[in-house]
Amino acid sequence: MSRENFDKLGEECGVFGIYDFDGNDVASTIYYGLFALQHRGQESCGIAVSDTNGPKRNVTSQKGMGLCNEVFTPDSLQALKGDIGVGHVRYSTAGESVPENAQPLVLNYVKGTLGLAHNGNLINAIELREELEKTGAIFQTTIDSEVIAYHIARERVNTSSIEKAVARAMQKIKGAYSLIVMSPRKLIGARDPYGFKPLCIGKRDNAYVLASESCALDTIGAEFIRDVNPGEIVTITKDGIQSDCDLCIPKEKTARCIFEYIYFARPDSEIDGVGVYHSRIQAGRYLAQDSPVEADLVVGVPESGNAAALGYSLESGIPYGTAFVKNGYVGRTFIKPGQSSRESSVQIKLNVLKEAVKGKRVIMIDDSIVRGTTSDRIVKMLRDAGATEVHVRISSPPFLWPCYFGTDIPEREQLIAYNRSINEICEVIGADSLGYLGEERLSQMVQGLPICKGCFTGEYPMKPPTRDIRGNFER
Image 1: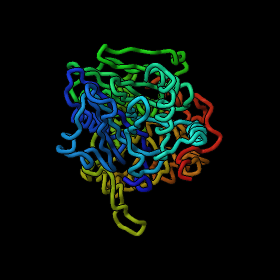
Image 2: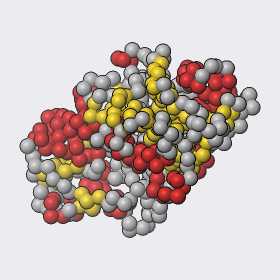
Image 3: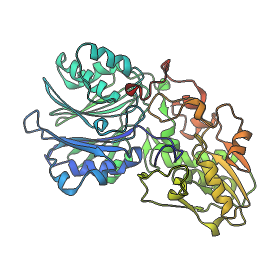
Image 4: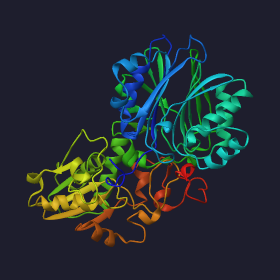
């Protein structure tokens, strides 16, 4: 969907890596892992593989614009030979949506090759990039992931191992990142000290896997071992897994992105010991407790609103139903309907079951309202289908602040909640009533796990940049 037409947040990326100690080719496994992570990014994707028994500079890769099933074919996967590899699906929050910015990045340097996939956003990427450019570095992309790759490569020249180079680079970079780094004989996973972005470890037969979400492990038949801890670097070699926790901070200071649980992650994933589905059910229960209303039916806006709607129904006793049929084939809209066009991108993606809502008072649960351009259309669709009342409940607090850590939240002036009361927002979207999840409920829905909620409160776990850094390299 074009961002202008479908008023949803975009996530930064999904990463996946595997090292098969038996020497089996891993490209097709990476493909299915990325397929499971497709919800995290639909703009571009890529796979890079290497043979750990072959020459050190022998990395083959393929990447392109589009979905996994558009970029890769059975023949192209067959050509990617290697027992170690890394993959990536991308949604751009910093860096244009162009082929050059697709990942994984592959660098050839004095010590061999480096393949890198990154999920997140750095807040000091501009300064680090300028510093590198002054010493002769030439950049081929406009993404901060290339800044990370350069720093790892530079540090590797002066250290005894790739994992030590990653650790040194992590001392320079600030912000949100889950990294998977492929060197000629090692697979490394690293998570920023705050743990903004998820990363987990799995095992299948004699192969180890790193992935953004546990649902990707399920897809390839791997067993979930554990999450990579915030600040931890894990190194996977034929000797097993080594862990470096020197950069870890006290657990109470960590700050996972709460939107993984509200919206980004697939409901069948578990992140840092908390099930995503369970957290959404809880959010719906809290909404029913805090914002009750008399109605005949509770419905969710697919997909992320469905579990919260079920939670609302379970708590309130109001029947849960299906009001929307989703077109499962709309990954993105290539032909963007213009202002004068009759085709609404919302109606291309969703249609209302008239017989389900006609003559009923409906509670509609959604995960967020960003600009409000979608919510008013969906409310109108329900009314046009015969709903007598439409009460909107949102399973997150109102957005009031930008995000600098990899979530595509627009500037404050574009946020519907900026300088508007809840009653005013309700009027704009045309609902009979509107209720948001209370900010104090966020920690409860993830069982007390330390979280970042800066987009709601303006209070960030680390000092934010003094200017909007998103997309800065193109300016």
